Image 1: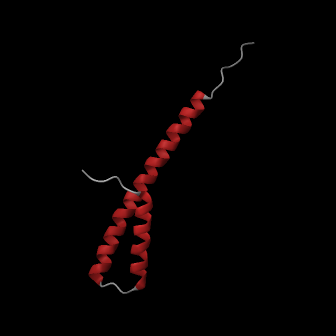
Image 2: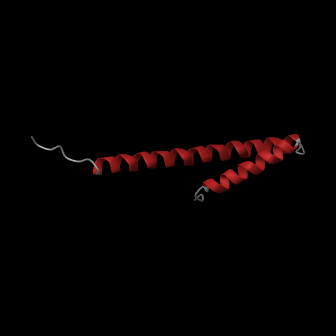
Image 3: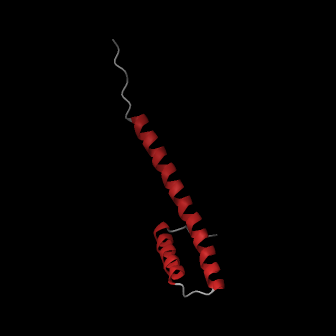
Length: 74
């Protein structure tokens, strides 16, 4: 069973990868490994953002539904 993805830690890890790759001190093999890990972290972060957006949409729709006021009869 995999651990739950931590979005904030994912961003921190991505920043570290970017800094390491921008330094120019990595070998080609290390650069490829960092790039691969960065792609995976990016996918996980994007997935977490999509899930959060869906939850916000769902909660907003529920809130709009429960806050609707009935029409007054004439």
